[in-house]
Image (cartoon, rainbow, N blue to C red; front, side):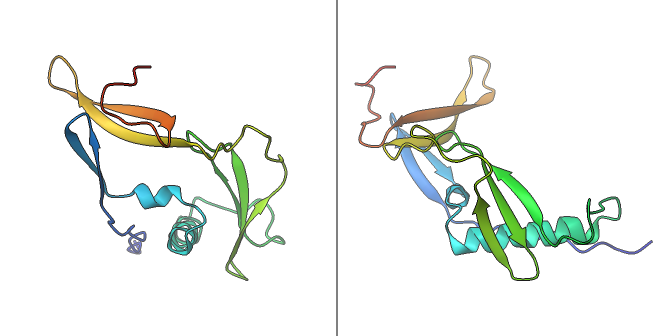
Length: 140
């Protein structure tokens, strides 16, 4: 059996936020910025690794180069990108045009973990306006 190469590893770039006195570090927050060249290169490497090294994967049409990626976040609508491995280009395609409320500039999404009553850490998503202070004075 042929040994498969390891998939590309995303670099760690820690960002620490303070939530009501609790410091939370997210090593991959930068991955939310899909316009970042390094994020695009990582996605390309992941796609090349996944489609190039997995014998169970076959393209739907061998006459067409590339793949389609669907990406969305808490504050951005579902967008479809086309990656062309021959030109190394990642392009947002307009199958579903962005609407007026699909990517508000004044919202921020943060992922944190909070301790439950039994001590288990539970993931929690916080979506809020950019300028709001997370000091307990702005209840939901």
